[in-house]
Image 1: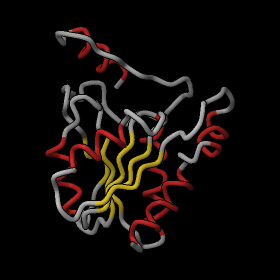
Image 2: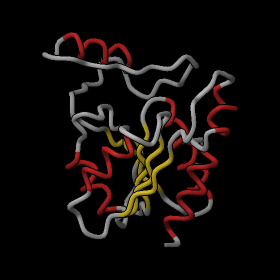
Image 3: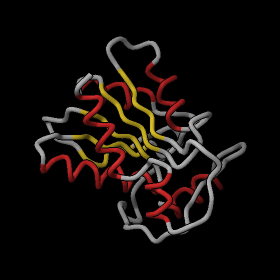
Image 4: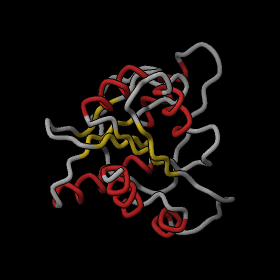
Length: 170
């Protein structure tokens, strides 16, 4: 998807910002997967989903891992890759949130201010009965092994699982 992001940025008028990460990550999309600015992708879903997880880049993998582990406990989660934060795909997020009981957990490798969580909160602000639990990096980040940092900053699959359980019981 990095290749598609670069290709899309090159063909988009105006300023684009692409954020990538250093760790090797599993491939989610085929090379010919179409992407568009402002178009989110539902990457995991079932008819019994109770919570919508939204993560991008490295945190998408954490959301997917959390969804798999929660599934083993009987808690079904839908997972969305927002692909772009500005513009955010509000329609896809709102539709899927409503199908998941109005519960959203966002997880991002970014400060709480000005990132994915705030974009999602803004997108659903006019909707009744949708609540958002936001996981983000609370302090100045530092270098280190990716898994250690994800845990340290509260954005690992383990933290996503805890947030899902918290939001389900509200």
